[in-house]
Amino acid sequence: MGGSGVGYVWQKDQLTQLGRQIKRRELHLAESKEQNEKLKNQLETMHSPRFLEARIKELNLGLAQPVPALVWRLAEPATPAVQPAAEREYAAQDGLTSNAP
Picture 1 (cartoon, rainbow, N blue to C red):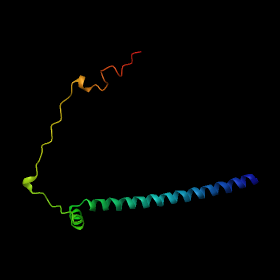
Picture 2: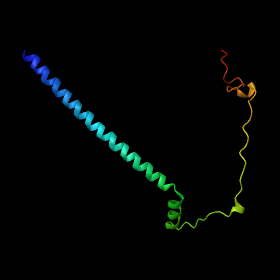
Picture 3: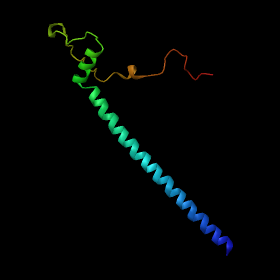
Picture 4: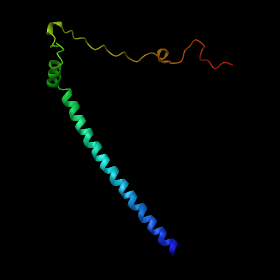
């Protein structure tokens, strides 16, 4: 009878401790999500042209928008069609990777 009582009390204590751990970890998760959202917003702000221009002026970098006549636009090269089977082989053909005894 005494062993059952001790076991019951121990089990209740374990449940209480686990409940506290779960609550603590849920709070940590919520804080991490909130911090992640703040950092995401800060990153978006720092990528904005207005912020970048202000930072350039603040650091006296002397950068300016390029003159459109000096900008060259290059066409994206076309992707090659399907390569022949011989070009798709990855192993070397020089005998260094052969399984010969």
